[in-house]
Length: 399
Ligand code: FEO
Image 1 (cartoon, protein in one colour):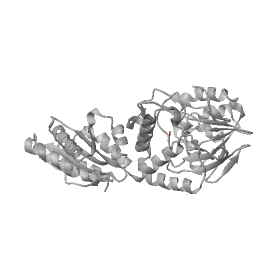
Image 2 (image 1 turned 120 degrees about the vertical axis):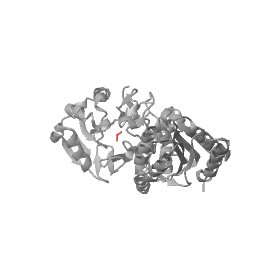
Image 3 (image 1 turned 60 degrees about the vertical axis):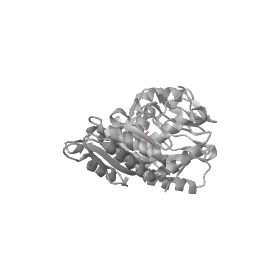
Image 4 (image 1 turned 90 degrees about the vertical axis):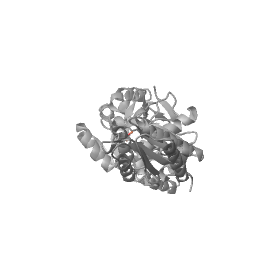
């Protein structure tokens, strides 16, 4: 795609990556691809905000060239040094060797460790409140440490009411469209939620603090242009409100039953538990984890107040297929979630205890004693599972 003018004299010069299917290694599936967004501000001075992932640097340069000769770039703002945004910097700086680089102190230190040629770059370290007048407009910098890396920063252009927050408010969504009012709202919010859950969940306390800080600055924002996906132009408040909800752990009357099974007994339990939850009016969804993408399930945890996890016992442990899901939940630490564990066993128990330990380690409150059944559930035991699910429903409800 070529450049797109997003405000008079301000251009999206990023690239669309239609093919990427995993991000951050295998932990985050990106079914709908992504984009790496860069922005070019044409004023008395020419400013580029963020570069792109290195394999796409050539396309970035073509897009810049469609607006201006890259040698005319005076300033490069580096809001974040992760390689999907800074990988293309050496190519940009080759074309514009005299450009000044505006970034936080942590970003400068990180860039020096990423790129040997950065020793020659013309750094200007900035902090919150520092400004860069570029002509008719002035860029204001706001440090955003741990949103989501220590080096992260937002750039705000008051004259345009435009916030460039890098990763924050982004989505992994490849599209021929650039704006929120041009795309399917369900798809947009689904990808924004998945992005929040898989990247920002453990940083929720800092997200809330930053939202308060930005609110306190009383700055008008009519457009939010993140570094991935779609630009919020029609309704930027929608994503801010969603972040407020997700970061505060506000959930819905929804429960997830996530399990795996050796020979079907734990699957029978899962089905009865799910039906018990549904019988109480809860929106319950059941996932066999070995057949499900766990980063999609984690996205659902943004809304589901209750997560019930089950496994057969093998070697006094839960099934290995649950480990990637439980590992990821443990590192993402969902906010204000409740849980319980279940499973069938043969001659020795172990899975339920193991799952409970993992849920507690993730900060999930255990609300009911685990349900363990020997071998194959009979009709009475199926009823017991149903009742156990039914009794959990109250925890998914708004207390
Ligand atoms: Fe999109 Fe933190 O990189």
